[in-house]
Each structure stands twice: as structure tokens, then as C-alpha cells.
Image 1 (tube, chains in turn orange, yellow, brown, green):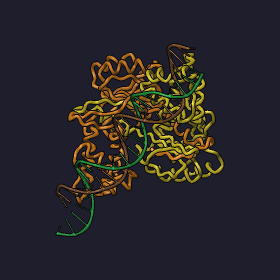
Image 2 (cartoon, chains in turn orange, green, red, yellow; image 1 turned 90 degrees about the vertical axis):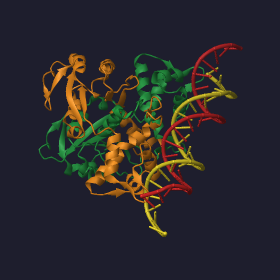
Image 3 (spheres, chains in turn orange, red, cyan, blue; image 1 turned 30 degrees about the vertical axis):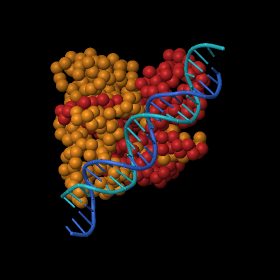
Image 4 (cartoon, protein in one colour; image 1 turned 120 degrees about the horizontal axis):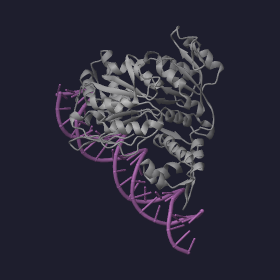
Length: 227
Length: 227
DNA sequence: TAGATTGTTAATCGATTAACAATC
DNA sequence: TAGATTGTTAATCGATTAACAATC
């Protein structure tokens, strides 16, 4: 759901559209699988068949960031994998906090893959007094009142918002004020973010509604969605 | 991440692009809020300011489905809300099953809003024997071996896949074979679906990677993403 | 009626695909 | 070298925005 034309400006004035950026994790995943299967090289055509995109798009996408292939040969899988890793910023570690120790918050904390990728949860906050002091996957839940203090003395890269939508606006304000530059928003409400703050929304209800639309053949639609 | 050009064909041969469909839940949400606040009418311009999209886009989007406004007046909030509800197929109930009783599966089962919207969980399956027979929010976990039998004798609209990616392909195959037409896929792998089956992917790792890209200012990017 | 705002056509803009020269 | 495949430019396609006649 694009509010505003979504672009990322590179310092050399070349614009990388969000459509391109959103495809990178998928390339990264396919290349990772090939790497595991000991596949050494891949042409844009090979990859296009596997991924069901055009070879043209793959080459265009990659060439936004540099020339990683070789004419007549294709791409070295490991090299390209590592390049995309760098482009995506996955060579560093990130500190994440969760605000809202409900069910979704808990599942994220227990999801082992994030740590493997360099996304480390360092703190959890909740508004409910009865949750404060309890441990989730080794992290003690703090009261939301501590949030601002915590942010002042700790570096946080990404705040994950899993609280009710009523509190989202005020919490987002604190988090942004304290310099957090990335927000993963699970609450079903929009966040007003200034430039320089990146927001990713995960709206499960929206996803179900889109499914619902697709399923609703009673009104005569024929469906052909993929994403 | 569009694999294939994403369109939905209406029976009158007009194509509704997925970009349009994906915006509908957001319109629906804003109209719902207005309704709660007793706002009776809204012009495309009013709405465009609130939602930070162009008025033109709103009118174009809506006119894919019919003429719901009135010149010189705008749109009746309640009427438009109900129209979008109908378009999205939210006037009926859906039966959902969850395959994978892990943390994400559990949080979805406990998420009260789905029921309110007509999305009812009717069964849960898992491969782990120790989980079978336990209750989650009043639903007994069944062994995955029962899945095919269950699908044969019960109507299921949407299967939510929250298991490990290793089992996703085989489970998806069963589910599709048994006639389930909607899949909400949380596992980090692509599902090969035939025409007529709608898939929504929720790839949390991808979302984090996109955030990571946006945060990575060290390589000189200036960021301006919204979604 | 006059003002406002839709529905819709036309113009623009951006993203995808095709084509091909460069070159490994 | 000959064949393959990239990087990149040009062509196409689709989505967004602008404009305005219709009309409430």
C-alpha cells in the first residue's frame, strides 16, 4: 500500500525504486538455496525460469547496484549472494526491541532465524503490570514507562510494534523522537514517519481481506493472483 | 514480490490490477474510522489528504467497481464502507485451518480480531506428537496425518501455513489437491499454486531485510520509503 | 442557479520487457 | 574463435496523475 511514491535515492542521484528493493530478498533466498546445493554459476535465464520472472528484470534489477556478472558466463552464485547480502545491509548486526509482549511479540522473540540473520532482540516492553518482570526467551519484560529511558542509553535500530492500535501513535512518536530509524509495524494503523525513518507494515487483517477478495467468486471474478 | 503480472479478471473482461485490490483494505479501514466518528460524507479530496494518496487515484480505484459517489456531494461514508466490504467479500464467513501449531500459529489462533471479521479457525494441525491433543484457544491440535481426511469432510476456505519450510511444499500440495482456494503462507518459501488458488505471503524475514536496506546509510543511501 | 465534486478521458510517468552490441 | 550471456538502450506496457465535461 503505497502512500507516497516509494523511492530510495542513491547518493549518485540514481533512484532505486522500492519495487526493485522488495525483490532483493527473494533473489537472496534463491541464491542461498543454490549455494547450499553447491551450484557455482547461474545465468539470468536459469534464475528467471526458477523464479518465474523475466531474465531481463533480473539483469535490470542487479544493474541498479553494479555489474556482478560476466558476459558469456553468467553470475557466480556465491559472489552474487554476497553482493546482495551487502546491498541489503546484512553484513552487520541490528538491535531490535519489541513493544507489546502479546502473542505476536512472543512468537517473534522465539523465532530463531532472526538471530541467525543478525537481528537481535535486546528488550521487550509492555504496558500491563502483570507482564513486567516476566521473562520471554531470556529477556525480561519492562514497563512501557521505561521505554524512553532505555532508548536514551541504548542503541536501537529497529522497533517492532505489536501493541494495540490505540497506543501505536504515541509509542511511535517516542521511538522516532529517540532516534530509532526502523519500525516494523504490526498494528493495524498507519504511522506518521518523518523522512529518514523506514517503516514496514505487516497487516495480517489486510492480507486476509485480499485473500477474501480473491476467494469471492460468487460475484463472478476469475482469480489469478500471485505474490 | 510479483512473480507474474498480477491481475484479477472481472467477468466483464475488465482487469482489476492487484495494486488496486491491495489498496482496498486501507480505504476500508479509514472509512471504518470515519464511521466510528460519525462522519457522514467524504469527498475524494478529503480522503486523499487523510490517506496521503491522490484524489484521482481514489476515484479511479473506486470506479473499477462502480459509481458510488455523487457529483457535487462526494461519497456517503457508510454506503462506501459497505460497498468496499462487499467488494472485499467480507459479508460472508470463512473457515480457516492452521497447519503448524508453533508460536505464530498460536498467536493467530488467539487473535480476536479475525473472528470479528468473519475469519473462523476450525482446526489446527501439527506434526509433533507431543502437541497433538493439546488445546489452543479451545481448538484441539490434530496430527498432520489427519489433514487430508479432515479436508475431505469439512469445508475449508483458507489454509494458514506456519510450519517449517521443509514441509511446506508437500502440505501445500495436499491442501490444494483437496480444493482449498486460499493460502496464507508464513513459511519462507514459494508455493507453486495453480490458477484459481490465491496465495498471500507473509515473509517476516524479507520485511526485516527491506528495513535493513533502508537503515543502511553507511553506503550513502538517503531513505524515503513508505508502505 | 452557482459551486462542488464526481466519473472518465487524456497525458504523464515509471516499471517491465525486448533487443542487441559488447565482450568474456 | 564461436557461443553464450551480460549490461544497457530502446520499445512497450501499465499505473498514476491531471484535466474537464457532466451533473448533483
